[in-house]
Picture 1 (cartoon, protein in one colour):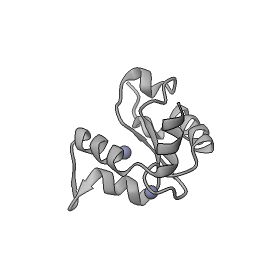
Picture 2 (tube, helix red, strand yellow):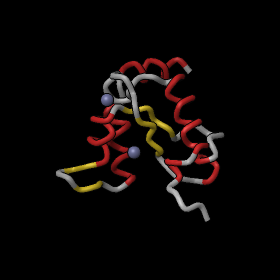
Picture 3 (cartoon, helix red, strand yellow):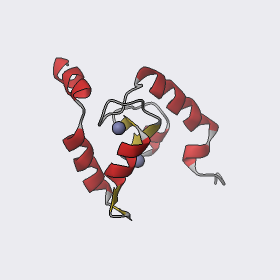
Picture 4 (cartoon, helix red, strand yellow):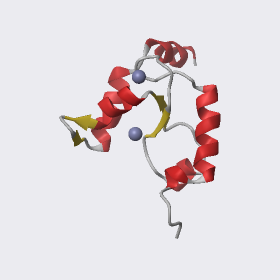
Length: 97
Ligand SMILES: [Zn+2]
Ligand SMILES: [Zn+2]
């Protein structure tokens, strides 16, 4: 078993760097994104092959979607908040498909 958390591995760093280069803006507010949030942690998703469940976020918005009065919220609630807070930049992109 790997001794370090997945997000600190070289593979994840690679995926994150490449993903943020292509998606430089926060999904929620449009600011510079510094964090790639995972909506779910399936093996396929973590392999970097599937970006459907990745979201570029700034520090502030990442905190906002994950916490409620200092308490971590459930992943379903995180997903709901993300969709609700979606920035217009991403709305436009998604409508075009
Ligand atoms: Zn943001
Ligand atoms: Zn997250």
